Amino acid sequence: MKALVVEQAGPATTVQDLGRPGLVRLGVGESGAVDRRSLRLANRLLGNAEDAAGLEVTLGGLAVRARGDLLVSVTGAVGPLSVDDRGVAGNSVVALPDASVLTVGTPAGGLRSYLAVRGGIDVPPVLGSRSTDVMSGLGPPPVEQGAVLSVGPSPGDWPVVDLAAVPAPPDDEVELRVVTGPRDDWFTPAAMESLLQASYEVTSDSNRVGMRLHGPALDRAVDDELPSEGVVRGALQVPSGGQPVLFLADHPVTGGYPVIAVVIGDDVDRAGQARPGQHLRFRRVQGKGYS
Image (cartoon, rainbow, N blue to C red; front, side):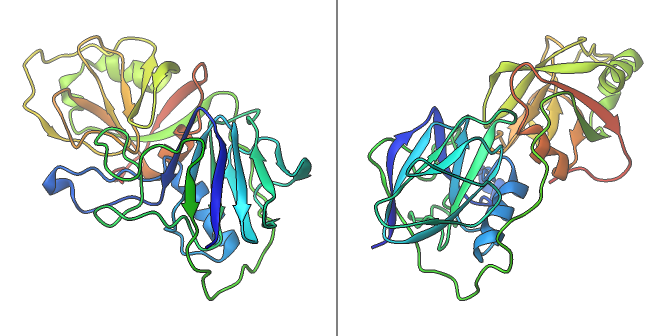
């Protein structure tokens, strides 16, 4: 049986696919990869379906040994990569012979790398997805040293390219497009001006659930209590202290604080690569941003 044997797990590695959509009415969040675009790319490079499960690796530190001859790819925040101490390229198709070890180092910029294997990680699905939801506890447990991750059967299609020319995640300020609302009328005009003109620092109090930001406080015009209502990936929720929280993949399905704006879906992928200490800037656009 083909598999990846985890020799080192790194600080935070989980199994992720594109999540379990359509279950919010049951109180189940979507979860899935924080940077969906990078996981999709890793799978396309290998001829997998885009929603095949791979590994989301935070700040590197992962080492896996091949059980059987495998093909893998690493995308997203790509740090130093090696197979048995031989350097290999990110965003490419990499041969991983039986018993060889792939090491994923710490990237110079960005936060999350995505390791896909041809055939996908074949852990048992929960509610239709193999994603680890760190908030609800659904899905497989976080990856630990010694774990043996089975690899599914190879797809019928073969890769048509062996290298993708994609830019590295930015290591400076990141601009994100937002649609204002649905509760922008709960905030003062000065608060909206601050949101759209100031920059907000990503704090260390951030994870797959959301990113706590620090910047000019967003003051309310309405001081009433808001009954809990649905929230989406990309929502900028503002607790009573006025510092916004940007919800990511494992966000709660409801919240009791007003949402001043929503980051559009494609830009949530980019936000998920921002490290603590980086700054985000928000630009208003028209249309739906929910994803």
